[in-house]
Length: 447
Image (cartoon, rainbow, N blue to C red; front, side, top):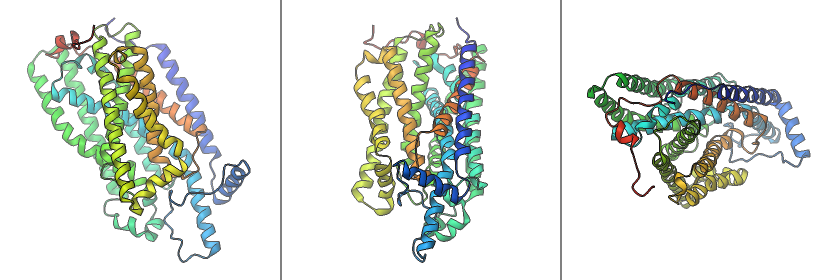
């Protein structure tokens, strides 16, 4: 079988995920407080359940200084702060998966551009799968933009710098207002998304054109276009990570952050590509994909996991060692209120892939690659959760209906869009000049 048909099972499975997810999200919004009094009641109930109703001062402040307030004023500020955290909860619960799945697609786009620019021979048989995964980039980006727009319209308090009242009381945010202002924020977002989607659509069109036209000029165009795009990608991805993730806590910054976010999305994208490849191969598609292709993707999963861990450690160690108050609050919040998640995702994202994928034989064993892939996806989802939640909801986090529902909802849409996109074109990019090299690719020490 050569061309993939969008199966009823996949369609049904993705629609069920979307429906279950939507119900969970709806329940999350329904149970969120709509005013300070309701928030106080929820916290009181949490206290009765031994959850603890306090909040971490290192978490997401709402911009008010404690100085100059009487006891009642401080108490009101505290209650308002907790209300914002609880009110943010369902919004953050959908923002995390919206961002995560969009970044998987973006990570695959970067991988695709690298393969094109380096003129790699081994990966050509996977091009159509990469193009299918990047088909989610536009809808995924639109979901993110919609949530950001709701933030700008004051439906939530995820981005405290969008609140003029907070800015008026906060000198640090006021000093950043030239960059962190709503019109410039959305102008940048449109530039990022336009650049990504433009490259994706043009390279897809040229790739399909190449199937029926063996003109070498198309290959050269794809090479040049991909090399140019990678320059744009490196700049836009770093700025996107500052805008859409780091600015949730506008008091904190890290010069490594763009690279750190890139490493997470890159390994998540490659892992997703490996999982989809193995699935389609099990369905009797991709007869031209062999153990060596799986082995190479597993090598990337292994290598980029170590690269991610290197960046995680570099960011953590340098901030811990310098012990500057404005910087360490980021990690204090996570270690105090998110201890298990914070260190647990390091185990999932480094220790597990390191131990399992170090063995060359394991890299070509489908079951082990799938198992490691699922662990990596969960680990990097928790990584994005760790980046967003402490600043958005403080210690009021949980994995409830909204969090699980949000993940299932966007997973369902991702699966539906990706597999539908894969079914739209021949599953082999047969016009590429190196296609035969790719089909017969063998890693030297594999059977």
